[in-house]
Image (cartoon, rainbow, N blue to C red; front, side):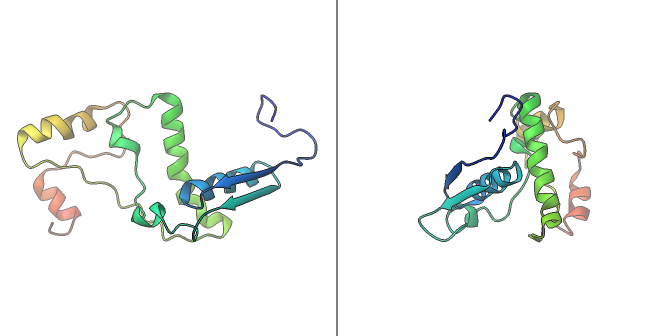
Amino acid sequence: MSSNGSHGGSDSRHIAVIGGGIIGCSAAFHLLRSGVRRVTVIDAGQPGAATTSAGAGFVSHWSAGMIPLGEEGLQLQQYGLDFYRRLHEVGVEIGYRPNGTLIMALTEDGRERFVRPVLDSPYAPPEMQDLNAAQIGQKMQGL
């Protein structure tokens, strides 16, 4: 691969991706999209049957803004979220539903220690909202 990320001439490489979970399959997908012609995914079992199936389909901002990611980390995070939203464009319907993430505390101390840093983080998603108990109940249909 050249320094600009392009593959010069005919690409005769055969790349093996070890692991057929979401990460391995995503790596194979992106390799093919980048122009690599021969990619083989190798897994000991059925694709997506191990850790991937235990993820419950949870897709969210990494650490909900609590860990500084830097500009590259933020771009990668956003790319990942956009990737799931766009999968239907390549003929894969995964039932993606952007439901949001609820971060809450039962005490004021818990709010200050766990919720406040997320709300105040420069890495927090722009659509983040600070809700009171009644607003959470409305959004979560009586939770």
